[in-house]
Amino acid sequence: MDMQTYLGNMDRLIAEYSTLMPFTTDAETFYKQHGQFFMVVALVGLTPDLEAVRNQILLSPTVPTYDLVQE
Image (cartoon, rainbow, N blue to C red; front, side):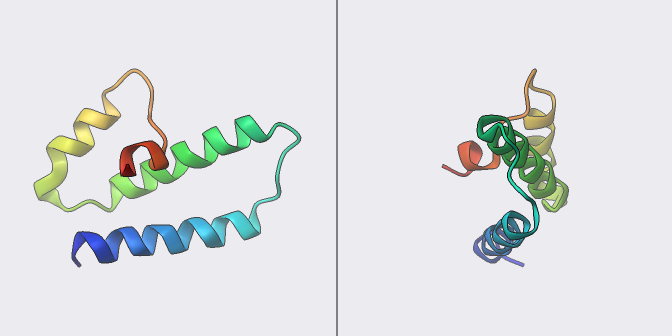
């Protein structure tokens, strides 16, 4: 699967997740957790040739959000 298709699948998964998960009273916390969760999901699905990128992101002191990395 090429990267564009993979990212498209991620965007679809995010949209589905958003319709199933209710919002919490603290929207800022929700969006941070939401973004970090999908960052980890995206990293798990990367191909082995991108292992260095995955390791670099996971070894950082904080896990960035999916939206931040996608930009």
